[in-house]
Length: 387
Image 1 (cartoon, rainbow, N blue to C red):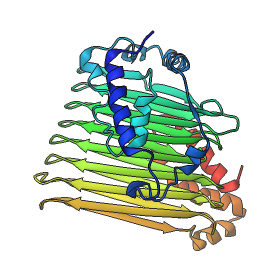
Image 2 (image 1 turned 90 degrees about the vertical axis):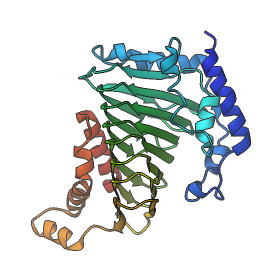
Image 3 (image 1 turned 30 degrees about the vertical axis):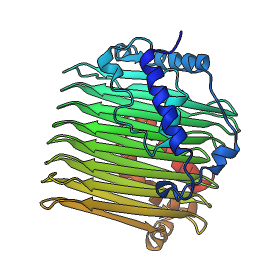
């Protein structure tokens, strides 16, 4: 099967953009805390078209039967749906998003018609690519007016060796739509992961996004949100961390483009034994976006002296009559609380585990899937105990 003409046109546009921008480096402001050099040095080869299509079909086939009718590949999309691909994930200044399209031959679209409620979560389970491979993953979630859907993307796999997943997910929530989305980045220790989630929320739309960044050697999640109409409401929750040489980067941009819209962010890091975390968050309130309400919070827990986090919450407000707040905290486990638990007979490891899991509980308990909650808790326990 040859590539669709509309996809070939997107690929050509991406090739021009990538040639103009090139890979980011430490001089690129929004990449200053995360080195790209390890990915470049790995000299990873793009996955060919046949292998991409085979994986897309395997992921599609594994979707629960009651939700499968809403999931399509790129082979036969109506023009109105085609137009959504590449519309909200901008290319300029985003080299990995451009490279995603440049290497792309197939992807998945979840299209929920107007007024339809999909009861079962749609789970897309992507494995870690083969050693030496660079794989693009592309997903569009298009929820028409008054539609409801829950989408879960999982990226995990066993084995050893370097590989790259370059993933872009676009979410378009039309007027009154409700979308719950969760992404679990749980890739193997030697893998690289660069993911971009771009969200557009329409009038009175509600979008929840839950991001787990708990695997890989170097992993970055970019979250770009646009609230484009009155009444749009977006809640963003993220949990990141691990131990050892793991490097986890969260880069969040929320753009309030319309009056009377709401956004809430809660990102938490749990870092141990030399791991490094990054949180960069910008809330931009455009001129005329009156009655905006926006909160942004990043809390970080460092479990030993070798762990490190860089955090930069930012507000950029271009009008009055808004309620906006932001903040960041970084600290260690409370010594008094640890002493209390030890005095009640708990050993040191169990006491540390209980306090750490309590720190993350608001985020893990909010995940829209029981299996995902269990995975998150297992990864956190590994960070605490080294298991």
